[in-house]
Length: 339
Image (tube, rainbow, N blue to C red; front, side, top):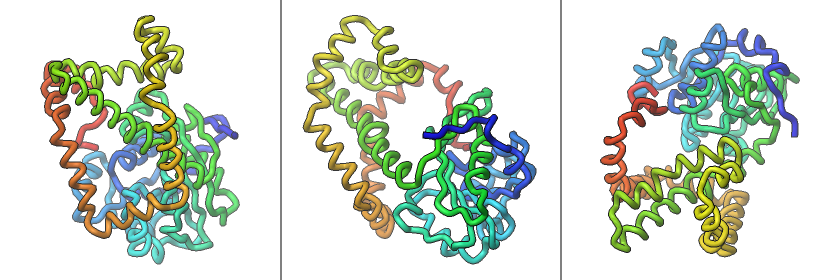
């Protein structure tokens, strides 16, 4: 595994290019602002005129262009719109408008790996995938740190795609923490697996199940929230800082012993088999196909699932308890009015 740092990058490669960031959501706002703060001379944001993000991008000082216009202008087009709309964006705005010899980049490999987009052969196609949400990419950059990034090259028409990617990564802060070379396949499949089985799907279902178990047993919802949801951050911060052993050093012996004797009974061989099945669905393309079909019916079940989560008892309890801790809001990463 090769890892590149700022010392390995020629940051002037990206600073001297015209860069279009298509999309201004979590990742889009972070990339655009970090590039600008790193000295990239010309950065525009590509958005349709109807997008609610136009005002946010303009308020941050960016020129906003229609994606078609931005594609014709740019040397590098970084696609940071949701996965489900990227193929249509390519067909409608990028394919015929990007100039020969320019580069298209992504922060996730799904559209390329599962052939939702088939790029023209004259283009560079590379990926810079920060290993963290966009709001963290921005906040870490601002404090002088960075989020590790993955770099991969799908097409190298210029012969310089990897070097441009490493330069881009350094300009958004990735070179401070390390830019790890990988492939579109490896990034895509491991990212989907981690999201579904651990980071989003697994952890959220674990927290909700713990909350529900305590409430059903007659304990106060507030106690259940603190024990099964609120304290998750405190534990994860310790792991983030120094691994699981570091967390066990900080917690009580009772907690550590309970981890050893009860944890494997909760996350057992049955759960690991479910993880293997999930990985197989990802590798085969079944999940990607299912997600694309969901979008063809206007995300009907997806939106229903989102509403169901919003109505979960833990959401209301958590909102009430967080209001008692104003310091949480003071340091928030997500400000929906700006990013």
